[in-house]
Image (cartoon, rainbow, N blue to C red; front, side, top):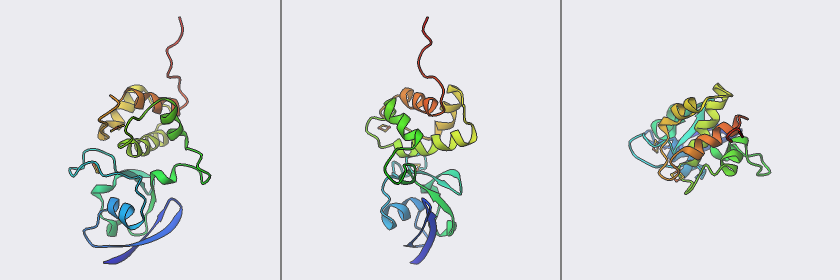
Length: 160
Ligand code: FES
Ligand code: FES
């Protein structure tokens, strides 16, 4: 075991890691940041998405020791210190973008990364970007709606 240090949600954090320790396990078990979920063992579900130096990554595909010194943002870093939800989180809440919530942290992190790259994506672009995130509950419609709403675009049908 070696102590690994990263900047997590703006604060320097250290926890031990073996050479084989995955970033997702380092966050969950080492730092007790359990908002990042593990939904598979095949790198397919996206429940573990965090931002690594500003880019979305599946934290189950990264070794903690390999990213020593990195800047990590997890779902816990998306709300303000007083608990006010970030705009993507608030849009998921308002537009029912979740049911059981298991996929939600990964969805929110992926969606936030999309909106950084492309502030006003089309519905098709949202669906394409979130292809790496699996949701068993929602049928995706309200997730897409939530992301479009978070981008400031209308998600309601135009009257008439
Ligand atoms: Fe990382 Fe499923 S836990 S992709
Ligand atoms: Fe249940 Fe997406 S809300 S898996």
